Length: 422
Image (tube, rainbow, N blue to C red; front, side):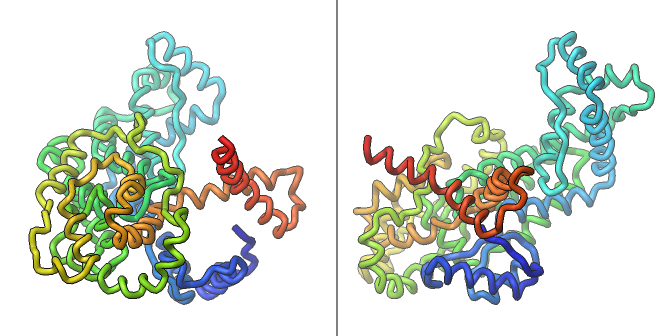
């Protein structure tokens, strides 16, 4: 994290990106992929700087949902009415107290309403979800306050359908926000969302949102076209949870050929990569099987995931490439092995099977290193906000940069030291 003094044009962004690599002495060959949002200046800056480019999954999902909301005016009116109700309570302490007392009388959980933020679509989802939860308490409050208009029956019903339609999107956003989420998850998530939207039972659940559902399908198909993005294809191919299950035959073959073509290039760096076992992308190796609510998704949605995985499962019985070279043999054995559960940790799997796939694991270390979202890096802005407070507003940018670096990395160093001592 560093100060950016000039305008945020593509040219200036490219200069800053190259300056960062020079300061930290990072060769361009070591930068596998630069993941960014969909801003035109970022796209140009990354391209001008000469890096391979990838767009954040969550940001693209945000744009797709925003466009879909615009396609149905009734939904926009419903959200606006819900936002006015929530704003009333957030701006009045007395109103909050009265709502709390009504919740106690009705034996409802003592929850507060949630205000949304325009830049985060899931905050609007949480606004609707919490308002629907407190529907009885809010409606009772409004009956005694003529200045505040309640939602109509049709709007309450539309809100409930919106929550049902967008629930998988919200859960996917939470999962992808994890610190160990990587780009290998992008294609499976997009494919599963498309299948979920196309299911007849999904249409039955949201009969009043046909236009929005169709718009979501169109936006996902437009924004998640991976025919030319080989790094996404290869990352999915090398993730033992997915392999080729979510790739069509052409995509799977492209991923395979990409690995074979890069084998020669990667072999030049074998010595440097093999001497550093810590180069594996095991960022915060925590088990994905933890009992967290964010992993419990509607069965109807994850049934779509399993359907795609089973329908497209290929055992790689084609023996044409077997015997050509060691890497080809490894890929064949890898594809024939059982696919991991979607909640399993792919990094632990590769760590345990590195000796069995010595050549293929080198590609896994590279292609599974790219994050699937910008959440981890955006946390630096929160850390900077802690350092730059009212009593420290004259802090020099260079010193602030150093303090953010120490604040972010010192706990990691301490954790490593503590683990070593133990």
